[in-house]
Amino acid sequence: MQEGVEDVVIVGAGIAGLATALGLHRKGVRSLVLEASEVLRISGFALTIWTNAWRALDVLGVGDSIRQQHILLQGFVVSSASGAITSELSFKKRENQGKKLELRCVKRNILLETLERELPSGTIRYSSKIVSIEEDGNVKILHLTDGSIIKTKVLIGCDGINSQVAKWLGLKKPAYTGRSATRGIAEFSSDHDLKPEFSQIVGKGYRSGFLPCSERSVYWFFTWSPSPEEKEAAEESVTKMRQYVLSKLTNVPKEVKQVIEISDIGEVVSTPLRYRSPFSLLWGNITKRNVCVAGDALHPMTPDLGQGGCSALEDSIVLAKCLSEAILEGHKGAQEEFDRIKLALDKYARIRRWRSFQLITTAYLVGFIQQSSGAVITFLRDKFLSRWMAKMLLKMSDYDYEKL
Image (cartoon, rainbow, N blue to C red; front, top):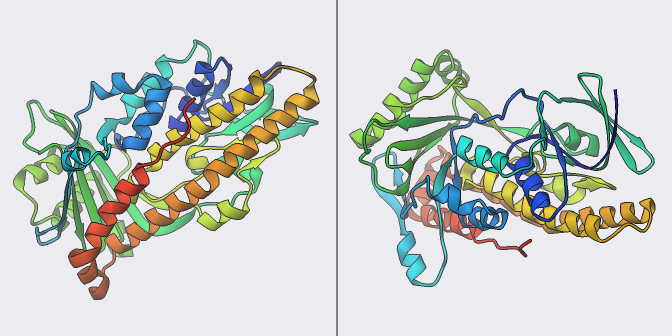
């Protein structure tokens, strides 16, 4: 089945894909989002939304709606495996010094469903997986599994860490870090006892964090560098994975243990942590003519800064602004329109290339220090580096960009 030419096709209805489509919609540009799954993918429980991402959500017009459903976190606390506090920071104190800071732990389903509701009906086409990408002059031809064909003037890959569009661009496949992550969310029948703060526990070869989403829900994560024997044993079942996590967190308060004990870990017991080499972004193709990538398709990174979803929202704002200006400038011929689109995507690449390099590199370095089991690094981390790492979290989140 042959279909007409679309102005913009976005592959993937995740955070980057939906936010980019909404950013374009706010500027009067229609897009079509192709999603391989049958329904909206809301796995992943929750994610940290820092100041930079709230700026993006406000530009998209959905910030206040999401804020109302999630509590504002007031501080950041890091403890060692022994229970000793190694770093502590009050967000209110920073705000009193004139430094804006906003952190909330947002449920993934709420974020995605909010973005989806704001899009015009028919924007997302589900059960639409791309088989191959071809070129016909300045037009990209997409072949789907159902046999249909879609032509587009602009192709944007927001199709995650295993992105087919990134592969088409020639970007290197993300590498495994040797670490894994387990995540869960606890839903309480009444208000929980945890303070409204981001609490982290850093031990030998692992890092764990606890963030209240609301008065009755708490998100937690556990990243680890297991031996092959530990990995095999823990991944046999959710019960064994839960026991493994609790065995590492022996010195945490009972209310923290309760979070893990009652939480929903989900079907995926643990997932490998992967990242794209930052140098491949400096020298590789983020864009090629009228094709580009955003979100995890562009900059998969370890979760140690909590910036994966935030940076995807940054991408969407910059990309929507650059692209809409090119498309809305007016038609003076197909070739001139193509040239404007190419220049717009080149501009997007210039803005996002170095930012992505910084995020991937900093996240990897912070993760290495946090989960090191070496005696020297452990000593330096607990005595000195915890404060530096906390500052890195704040520094990477204090990013602003020209608004739509």
